Each structure stands twice: as structure tokens, then as C-alpha cells.
Length: 387
Ligand SMILES: Cc1ncc(COP(=O)(O)O)c(C=O)c1O
Image 1: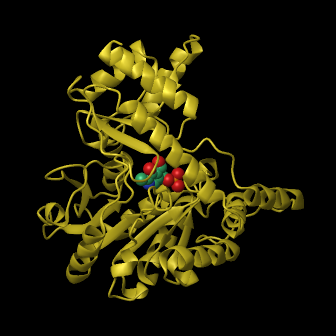
Image 2 (image 1 turned 90 degrees about the vertical axis):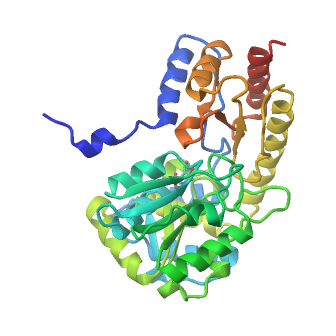
């Protein structure tokens, strides 16, 4: 039987591929250090565990409304008001099985065949593939300089087929935060031209050095129900709850209704147990996120200090997320080759920059333990600088 052209056109997840090789080496007893990860190593918030226990003990775990439970939506409304300064209604929210499903629901709801989606380089590996799955055309835009595309870089890629501009700030993989002028400029441009602005805010509270990731809603002239902005968030990264698979979208009622229809036909609803746990995490009044953020900031500093000992890299200090994206091209311009060599010789897993659309770079995560970060970068240095 033949596999569809669409399925054939999809790339394999770079990180999963790397995991496979790293795990095979580990199985041979090799002490591999994984600096390619994309999730915190910290335990989940107490409130999440407690809420999930209580639900399980009650014995009733059933389907929920497709768009999510009222209890979780109420927590999302409070959360959005606190961290975005806008108050959505329940009709502006879809709870999904991870931010990833929220993005996919949106793309399927917004795109007609061959509509174009502008994606600044470097981008999260899944964006172009998700656009293809929704029958759209990914249009990749390289920044004229540095790691952040500007409004004029992005505008130069706009055509009459442009339907969506996708932005992830702070950005996986670069760790950079798009400046206020870019967000404000894009909101103004998208509102004027009726182009959707998808803001993937999944790392928006994991920012360092007193910086804030500007929210697109701050610059919007249109009210939420007439908004071009679709904001994505979730508990995976900020609350260390990747395995629960809970994300959500905040958008106009019109696109939200379409997204609910898509989700209802694909997966009915997100897991009831996970929604309860997510509501427990959001309701908790403690300092879980701030502690996680502070711990990551320390690990960011450690990684930057260790990397700066390498003789030939160029690194823009990460301002957010838990990723660094250094230019290793002076060692080897082919990032896949370099990554394979480091895994073999240094036993350190690092994701090749080409997987994020930018050759010559490696993505090294600082969500690993401090010991692994220090040891991993030392091994890379010894392998590349020979000392
Ligand atoms: C930029 C970005 N968006 C979305 C996601 C997916 O989040 P979730 O686990 O909630 O699906 C990730 C996960 O790596 C990510 O890096």
C-alpha cells in the first residue's frame, strides 16, 4: 500500500532522531549527556498532583466539553488577566492536548490550500511540518542579521497569499526575545492587512535579567473578538508538565468556534485528568514558576560561562527559554556532521542548527542538571579545542 504524498513530505523529528541514537549508545553502557532536551527536569507543582489524585480517587474520569472544562477555563481567564492584562471570555478559549495541538487546530481552521504562512528562521522544528499538514505553504524568512527577523525582513516575504505570520517569543531555538518594536510593528501590520498573527507564548514567563516578553495584545487596536492575534500558551514548559499535554489558545470567538469543531472531530477533548491537574497548577498561589525561572537563569549563566571557554564559537546570550543557539561554524559549517561527531566522540547530544533552518549552529539546552551542563560543555570543549 502506498503512503500519502503528504505523509511522505514530512520530516522526521530531529530531536526524536537524536534521542534514538543517544539511547542506543546509553544501552551500550556509554555515559551519554543529553543537552538536546526540551523539558524541565523539575517535579510538577504540588497543586497539580493533588488535584489529579483527588479526581482519580473519586473514580470519575469522563469526556469533557470539546473546548475544555469550565474549571480550567476559569483558571485560564484569571491567568491571562494577570499575565497579559486582557480578560478573555470562555468563548475565546480552546483547551487542547498541548500547545502543539492548539497551533495545529488554528492552522487547520485558518488555512485554505496553498495559503502562505510566514515563519522566521530559526524556527521550532514542527512549524513548517504543521503548516504542510494543514495544506498550507511555509515561507521561511531569514533575518538580515543576527537571530531575530525584523518587521521589514518579514514584510519582504508577504504576498497576497499570506494568511498567517507565526512568531515564537522567547524563541526556541535561539533563546532570544523579539523586541517591543517588532511585536508592535507586526500587530499594526497584521491588523491593517487582515493577516493572522500567531503568537506562540509557551516560554513567555521563562525570561531572564529582568526582561519581559512583550505580549502582542498590548499593541492591539482591535477588540479580542475582532482580533488577528491568536495567542498560544500551556503548562508544558512553565509548569514543568510536558507529559500532561495541556495547552490552550486565546483568540476571537469566530476562529475559536472553528478550532473547537476541528478538535472535536480529531480528539473529542483533552484528557479530563490532565485538565484537572492543569487547573490545579494554575490555581496554586505559590512561587513554582518563579523558582523554576530562577533555577533556569542560574543554569543559563553556567552554560554561557562554560561555552565562553570555547575558542571559536559566537553566542548570543539566551534571554529566555532554556536553549542556547551558538554559531559553531568555525569548527564545522555542517551542523549535522558536527552533532554526529560530538555524539560519537564527546558522548554529548546537541541538536543541529539546520533542523531549525539555520546551518552552522548547535542548540544546547540548559534544562538539564547543572552537573550535566558543566560536564557536557567541558567534553565538547576538549573534543573541539583539544584541551
Ligand atoms: C516553541 C514551542 N511551541 C510549542 C511547543 C509544544 O508544547 P506542548 O508540549 O504544550 O505541545 C514546544 C515544545 O517543545 C515549543 O518549543
